[in-house]
Length: 254
Length: 106
Image (cartoon, rainbow over all chains, first blue to last red; front, top):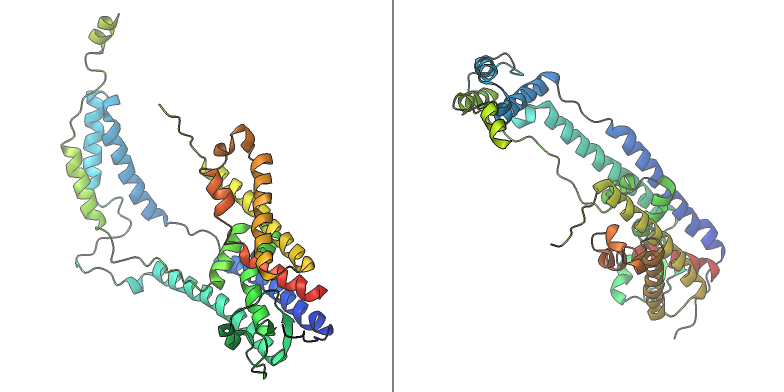
């Protein structure tokens, strides 16, 4: 057992605590800025939505047409087929060329890319700044003794900049305290922010896993094809009303 | 016919959140304790595992009414979710507090 190194007690007040304090504050700041930049939920343009909901209406009619009488069914079927064959509910005029649209000209894709870039910036800028700050102010000396021993392979990382090659690995430099904080501050954020989804996002950013934005691929089927297919489906719907022969059935049941 | 419990998503999430909050605070507090007691490294981690499990047992009994066998109403697989899932997840917090307090009181 090697004798203990005497560390200046002032180190903990002027290095250890400030680093933790700054990291907590930066984390909170980052969570708030991320929230401000993310904005509200995106709205679907109303024409697009109308297109979808008309299809939904046709689907509901196909599923539930047995509650209608023969005449009502005929009327609705005619109306739906006629409307499906016009372009009344299309969200945008159908272009003739069959080329799929370039996904990078689509504004929603650009938005997704933009969000990813913002997230990455919010991730890298504070981390780089804090690491630079620590390396600039607190480089080259030992600030603390870890309560547990580590193998020598950690020496490279944890004693970076300390010019004593034979020092016990338990004595570490400020940058390792930064790493310990980086991993361990999650519950502090949880308690301070009271919103675990923001905290999860924060920790996810810190762990450097990048989420791939959802880039709209080269489109699903064109809307006119979908509508035509739906009209054909509607043509062959076999209508059987629940009112057919209802009198006989009721009398039989009694 | 076996009865299957259906969990309402937001409620289940809320339960999990509560559990993880308790576990967060527990591991922080255990870290402070370990820093003050300054145990040998092996006992330090043992201290964490034992203290963590004791607090989980307390949670299981008081909050989940586990003795009446009702923990299954709050968690899908209560034993796994309460005792095992976050054990490794919370170690960094414990180590951080341990290091900090150890350095402060030394």
